[in-house]
Image (cartoon, rainbow, N blue to C red; front, side, top):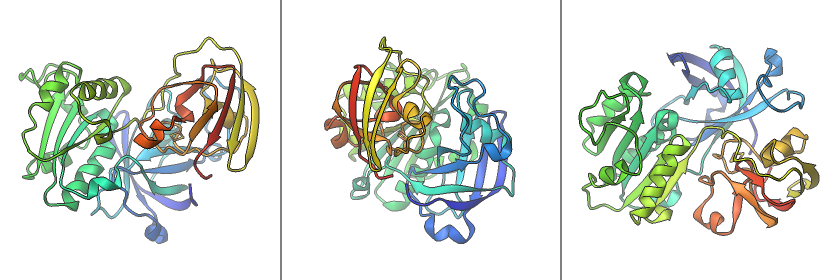
Length: 362
Ligand code: FES
């Protein structure tokens, strides 16, 4: 994961009762803060220092750690000087609650500089029509990518389909309005509150709507697709595009929500052997209670991880023996998926014995 650096919280703006925009200043470390299209940073959130009870409402009885690592998408474009994130407070999101309630201007904390696997390097090598499907706060990494692809190649174009409840819920509304006048950018809002008359853009991005939206894309350029939003929306868009014969390797997706617990397996105990860069871990735990990564971290094991939300892929692992139920594996490459790797933060054992090997360096 590299080395964390000190960053200053330069500005905290409340965009609505649940979402803040935070501008950061890496100060003398700016040289280490390079732009990554659709990238994310990882905060070391100092819970204990702020006397914050991070286990409120949580199932685990484990003691609170001093610092919790949480990752957030950057809305930063290639021309932006200072990194920004938008963070929506969610009930289950300890980090999002901490940022929404405790972040103040002038506060300093440690953060790992941007990383990201959402936007493949090879997508910089030709002109493409990028089709972005976003919903809610899922816009953040896609807004960064929109700026990047328009800036990177004059032949690129972008169509963004952005789903929200109503007009007032649209994040980055002013910025998107400015981009909508760009000759190579098309932005289409879908709203579910009944305020749009056109049936194509009224309602959710579901299996009925996505083929109709897809048919509005008229350019001859090869298409590349990015999806970011809640699980139901991602599944609907992905499933529909696959049924339309869109090549899976031309689709990338991201989920920044820490998943609610995966469907509980019946299994009451699982014996886990986990090979990590710092040694082999043996543990037995109840898979009904926690996902695999949570179980390892809660027991104090030092395993590669960062976001705990299926984004950074630091927790990627090969299953050598046994079976797991996987909630999502968007952050893995097609090749890694084909090899049967999984994200441990998105996985729960389905067999009473599990042997896995972490693939990322610490
Ligand atoms: S910890 Fe980031 S994907 Fe699992």
